[in-house]
Amino acid sequence: MTEQSEAVEDWSLPGGPRDRLGETEDIMIAPIVAAAAVPHGKLPFYRHLYAQVLAAIAAGILLGHFYPQIGASMQPLGDAFIKLVRMVIAPVIFLTVTTGIAGMSDLKKFGRVVGKALLYFFVFSTLALVVGLIVSNVLQPGAGMHINPATLDTKAVNTYAAQAHDASVVGFLMNIIPSTIIGSFADGNVLQIILFAVLFGLALGRIGEPAARLVDIIDNFLQGMFGIVRMVMALAPIGAFGAIAFTIGKYGLGSLASYGRLMLCVYLTSILFVFGALGAVARVCRVSLWSYLRYIREEILVTFGTASTESVLPQMLVKLEQAGCPRPIVGLVLPAGYTFNADGTSIYLTMAAIFVAQAMNIHLTFYEQLQILAVLVLTSKGSAGVAGAGFVTLAATLASMGKIPVSGLVLLLGVDRLLNEARAITNLIGNGLATIAVARWENAFDDVKWRAASGDQTRAAGSSATVKLADVSADNQS
Image (tube, rainbow, N blue to C red; front, side, top):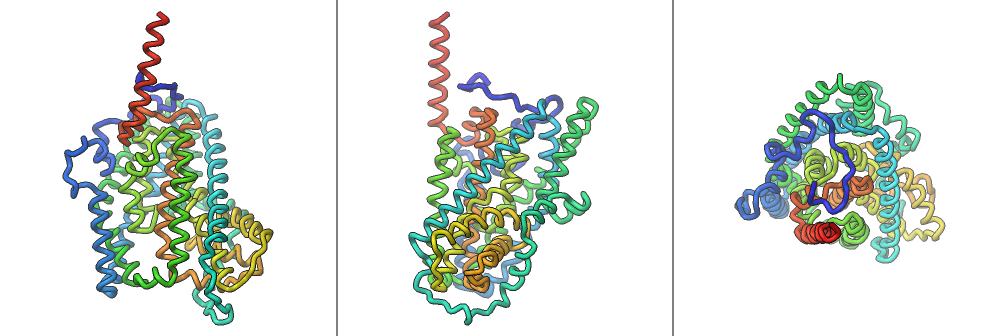
């Protein structure tokens, strides 16, 4: 790495074909990586995945608006695409984490990375909760609605209220341990899969050279799984079209007007968080936020269309490694962040709780709002992995407070699906930057790979100038 302006700690995987994701012959394992490798202007605009997804989203919005019944019937297209992606998530995470951990030259790095990642997750998820609380108090999205709790039909939220009783920190920690290995893969429980992969990788690492052949086989299996990801991602425009057509067809653009203030608050706060808090993280990590957003633009559009970050997890693993993050860090930080670092969801949780209180004319003191914040710090982790986790978290929080009726969640049912996009995109951007931040924190981030993948020419020029000045200084001293 002669172009590097600073030393990068060795996170390479010793022996065997461990670093294939960085080689030219394997760039085609994901469409976006292939597009990044092709010189600018070589591919027509319509051949790029982001252009196809953008066109599909526009077509889905038009279909859902003008032909709502037909649009609502497109739901199977979006659901089928997400199911195809979920089909490969479990093996991709297991194989990525296993090969990464098994190839660590120093297993102490594992504990260091986990500690730094959890610290980062706690700080920024809490910051997102605070930002949501502040903005909801300033803009007051629920003011003036004057909802009488007695008039609300609670049948629709009874399921979430029941699940809230099971959403505890102890229950969450116990759920990390799988009853059976096969069961964790069948259920797609990410944390259980990560736990097993970490233990298996540590075991292979302790065996050492005798296990090298098995690690090579697992690595080859991983390349095959990424080949499946490449095929599945070719269907991303169809999935985005079906999902967005269903959303607009079922809920209609009229929902945007009736809940306009809440939607504006959530989207505006998410944008401010990305360009404020996460922009500061990018600056500290010495990467351009715009270059990063441009680099993952396909994933952002697919996430917007499907309202799901799961739909882009496999290719985000590839892209972050291609952009200079070591595989062990990518495999540990990114999947764990899907559970522990949901910045967009955290913003929504505090805003939704305050919105319900404002809509019902319930005055909350400063102390009571701090109590909501403290409870959400815990319940937002305790309900992770539960179906409808956002509503379960809110139900558990409101139930613990006793002042805001849980029935108030009914007010959010009609608009929740329309807010999913903002939450999912913010979660995606935040977890990708978290991975880069931990890699930089470990002094393991490869600036040369980053510049080659992202096209961050401004940073490249500055870095090259630094290298040249260092060379000139060395020549003068000699």
